[in-house]
Image (tube, rainbow, N blue to C red):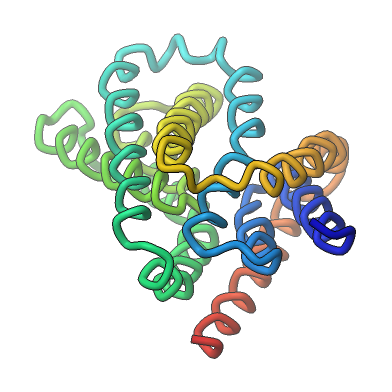
Length: 253
């Protein structure tokens, strides 16, 4: 790995870690960097998942004390995270490089829409006059969360805000509890996906570890910046980046 590639991965990791700490959306910066570093689409996705895993785990550790209010959902949601993450990772391997690369523009499009619409979707779910104790609502939300789990193991960008929207339909109102459960769910999706990718031998550890280093530093810096920078500014920036990347990859394909 030459110095130019190292600089690319560290820089993308730093930017991704910083933006994740402020508003989320690191994958928009880190996954394309893995592709630019010369990795195949499957290896880039797997290595990117490894590189970003510490930030999700750190977010969970920071908020784990707030899980108490959501303890009645732990078993079902953790099961969905493990099963969905494993299935999503398996789908990546089943598709292979060529077919997964063909999916990249569409994945970026979906991720951009999910990321941009996330806050609006959460507000709408809060306003929805649905009775979370109804069996039909609970089943629908768990099916929805299972699909999010599969997406998390498959690609995962933008899944956080959609998970929060689903949690509002299950009666959770404390944002800290919702974020704690969402972070644990994301950690499990990423963790089981990493196990699948490692067993398949598709992780490029040099690339993943170099990017992880930049991401850890960026996360710390982003946390400091997030104390003073309005979150909607960062979200607007990430949405713009996602839009530009989506258009570029569609044109390229």
